[in-house]
Length: 191
Image (cartoon, rainbow, N blue to C red; front, side, top):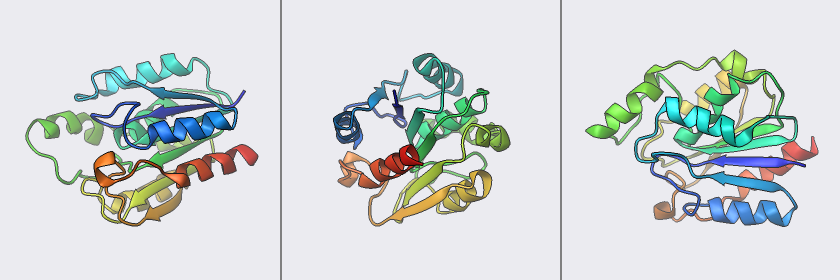
């Protein structure tokens, strides 16, 4: 059975953004879909989020797929560097990587983001889990710097898709459906 795990972003929930739409589309195709309710969503931490994802997945296999939004992308990458098995693929949406500054954050947000920005990811280890990476960005994201696209391509060999005027892919940006995510997952599943 093919399984898809969706990891929302900072301050997110399974009921927001384009997650309900994606869940409905995947389940209509007979895919087991889990849109996770990540803990302490307003103060995401590496030490809580990665074990939470690992516990939800139990065993990652070739029929296991992931979708991440924003800090959910890092959560998935940090999880992948801990596993030995092979998975089907990952679609990242509005992802940002360590060592690349986040735009538009201030005050307490900087303290929350700091460990995610300063703790390196072992990209080689993460790449051992799959060859199927797609990273989707918006040309007007207020938080994610454009150099993240090149970093995903360089570090993971990810296919890059740039959407027009989607902001940070949130409901506030008018993003309640995201067909590119569904299309990429279905391509991975056919490969």
